Length: 106
Image 1 (cartoon, one colour):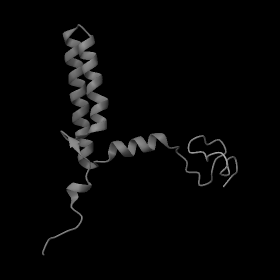
Image 2: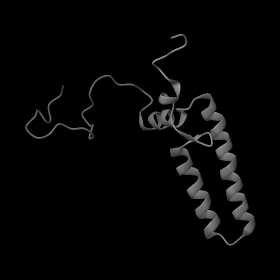
Image 3: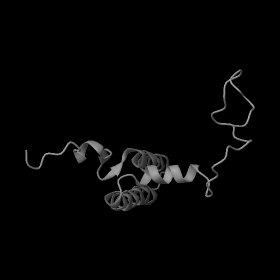
Image 4: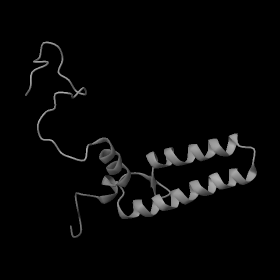
C-alpha cells in the first residue's frame, strides 16, 4: 500500500484539551475558579478568569510548538542543573531493600 505507515502520529501525541495538556489545565483553571468563587468583587472575578484565559492561550501557543512542553519542564524542575553520573550517598529515593546490599555503594 502506498502511504501506509505503522507509526500513526495521532496515537503517539499527547491528549490535548483546547490545545493544552490536562496537567496544565488542572493547574490553571481550578485556581481561577476558586478565586472567582471566593472573592465578592466582580472585577477581581473577571480579572481572575481573564488571566486564566490568557495563560491558557499562551500555553496553547507553546503546546503547538511542542506538545510535551509541560512534561519536559516538570522533569527539568525536578532534576538538578548538573548531571552526576555516579551514585550519590545522600540519595533517599529508590533505596535498596534490607538484605539486598543496602548501604553499599554500587
